[in-house]
Image (cartoon, rainbow over all chains, first blue to last red; front, side, top):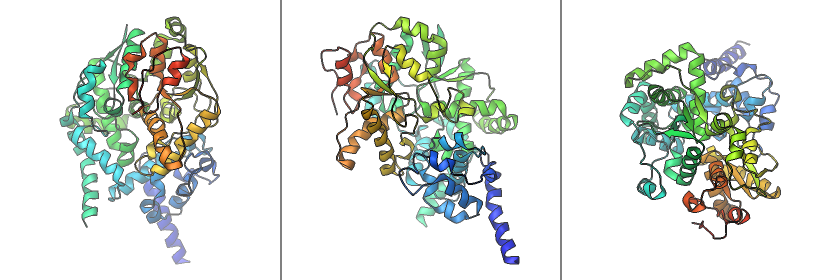
Length: 174
Length: 300
């Protein structure tokens, strides 16, 4: 019995952690009806993702499976599930929270490191093509105003964004 | 004349000059002045939200402060930029504590979010500032006979509580704008479903399978083209059809046009001025149907 209580406490800890993040507050309202899964464009295509199951695993406290698994990266962020949830669970926002926690622990899929590096380097997640920049005037477009990367980097340092990328690099080099 | 600070974002200048030129030309023609502000960066969209929400809010807020300083409302051409900027703007205006927190971060760059401008998608500018009635009056080359499958992209509509652009389940504004040009907006299966674009780079096969459904469904509905409002949806559906050749051994040739391109054509602009050769899928079928004799686009 004591073991079970301990297990329950550990389980609750993960939903408590999620609820402390902005966007994660509604997770415990989920009653597992599955409206989200039936509204999900990704779940229709692949068994790798099912929003109801992600929420279920998170509520059961399976922190490792949720944060190190493949599923949380397969949400297409369409918000269909969140619009339709009868319990007003902010499912898409919760998946963002789970991604944020996982990335802080160094789990960053490569595509995100590319985006992050672009943001830090050029202030753009899609790098500007030199070819198109030159071609702009031929097409009749005005010159592109430069991004203020200097100010942006100060903001990225203040939020700790630069450190998140570093953590991934450290983890890869281990 | 109504003036807006134009928020271009990353994908449009990097990949889609045809979107930018048609949007600039058509909006100018309709009396909307677009002002390019210096210093604007990435908007902090879904991929940045995925890494760190606080960073996304701060980066979006930073860009909004540039428009605040210029005393201008913002207009976006990209649905992703719209979502991220409009969501941040609404959240910070509503939540004083969050605003203070973000302002502490912005102070490192000498900026402060005040909350005195609006963020609009150009679809809203067309419907509210120009108006359907005036738009119809400006059409000099009607798109009559053209069957258009509208696809606004997810982040124009959802999360609806923060974006408040249209009904998320029964939207009509985009269809009204298409029909104002004389074209017919046709119904197709799963019209409101995502294009899968944000999964590109992590699960390309899944993203392509979702995009394929949209191409198949619009083809079945006999649409002449799909109209988009988002550079990311455009890329996913246009380039996607090239990828479908090798992935599924299927030949698709559904032209994808940005709404601004259809708008420019309906305002009587010459297709040659619209850099249509940047489309991967030829748009000749659409031009033929509209009565342009010569082929002006080439496939790459």
